[in-house]
Image (cartoon, rainbow, N blue to C red; front, side, top):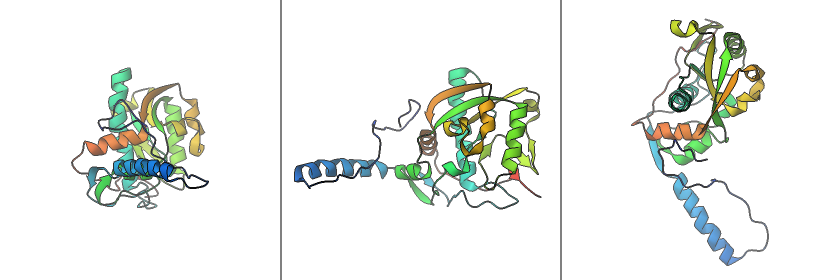
Length: 231
């Protein structure tokens, strides 16, 4: 779970639990208790502060985006863009994250390391895909017909049509940051398999989230106008 781009002082461990089945042994139990306490103390570390309650479920049929989805998509844009530019000399154009990859809400108040694991429990890594305008248009059509809002950043969708910067609209290819689960057609996004190139950043999505939280004084987000449907 460790990324060389992280500013947080991790130990190279996987924070998971296993059940021990069989006769109890006091010496083994003592060792387990030591590691349990160590894991619990690390997960309880405060890494930031949230100004409000942010969830993936506060969208509406018209404003088809969520406060937590927007936050995570914007975090991916900022964190992945920096790594992508340093490694490959290009900037990211857009971000796509799947709604189902977000598994919990961000509560108001202190943000603990354990919150990051609850919100983003999967071991997904960030990747950047080189895509054509045709694939981008296919993506917009897919998103417009979905039941749940998949988080996006770097462009807006108004009544099934994408709006992007004039400068970007002149390009014949785009760089899309997403996670490696979607790369292989996860959540039925098979159009992403038609990419022209894949850039592996070696940067876990959860690490990007944690790094961003640590470096912000307070976390704030909202439902906005980046995805308006049926207006």
